[in-house]
Length: 350
Ligand SMILES: NC(=O)c1ccc[n+]([C@@H]2O[C@H](COP(=O)([O-])OP(=O)(O)OC[C@H]3O[C@@H](n4cnc5c(N)ncnc54)[C@H](OP(=O)(O)O)[C@@H]3O)[C@@H](O)[C@H]2O)c1
Image (cartoon, rainbow, N blue to C red; front, side, top):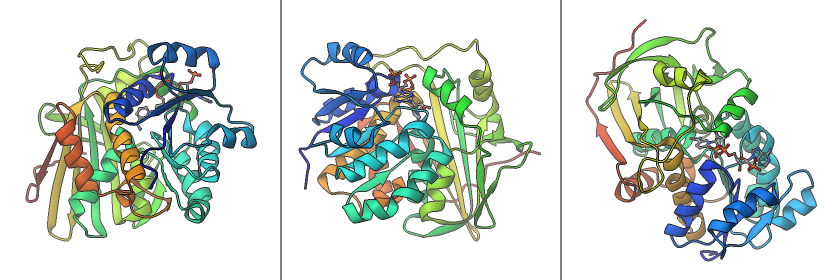
């Protein structure tokens, strides 16, 4: 077991990276600050003078592997992940380190699964993309709702935000990610309808009834990886999508002592197996900030051995989903998980 090996954070200069460093320190782990720019890393290091820092370029595989020497887990929070995920995850596997990232981009997850499953198994390490708000949280919720069952006839994931203050990284990543988005239809990955469906969704409090649009993220790829699902559709409330699309929307700003913005979120999941409908939802504050305890919980479990085997895997496949959610509910202020096995109060419109 390598419980005491450091955790390298690539993208330490970013908004999400800073939350992740703080969370690693809170959990008693040893972060190594990493990124492409010595100058920008120096600014972060000024806040954490005791921490090691490494400037790492992704375009030289030998140097990249050397840059990961001695590390137990690599956390990648430098997006667009279409540019960073595969080279960094490959180098992590070659260096004998586990790999986690926060990608919401479907093709980045597909590439990592396709290219690195066999090498990761051979190296005895786990590669877990999308361990974050978008992607991982829905994957963990669906896995937990299934409670050991291997699949479902129908899954619906509805993400609701009271507003979306996007970071610069989110905007760049959205512009870069032009691939046709995928859903699961008849048990297989299939393109999202064009135009995407619109509907209405009854979110739990505090959001209530909202117009939504079908907009799948990386959870489709992770869920498809390990669960047998007939239909999977993902929705986002249109008000938050309008925030994202407006160039006038500001980036997030700190509103509490943890540096979190005031943004509220709900991830509402409905899973149907035959006549049995289960609903599970997670609510909390700040989608960027909450990604830190999600991914750091993954790092803790990779280091202490509480993960299932090796290979390129989904969050709910690598970790005990219900236990991860219970830990987040216990540790993250304002994060709650609600389950309802009988509810059918969800209503989609036209
Ligand atoms: N799935 C989720 O729920 C979730 C949650 C949070 C974030 N994210 C994603 O994570 C990414 C970062 O978000 P953020 O909010 O932290 O953005 P941010 O504050 O703008 O930071 C972006 C970070 O990525 C680094 N970076 C960007 N392109 C790079 C490249 N080609 N090579 C090396 N480093 C690169 C930047 O390094 P420099 O300082 O050197 O420019 C910086 O550290 C975005 O793609 C965002 O969508 C996803």
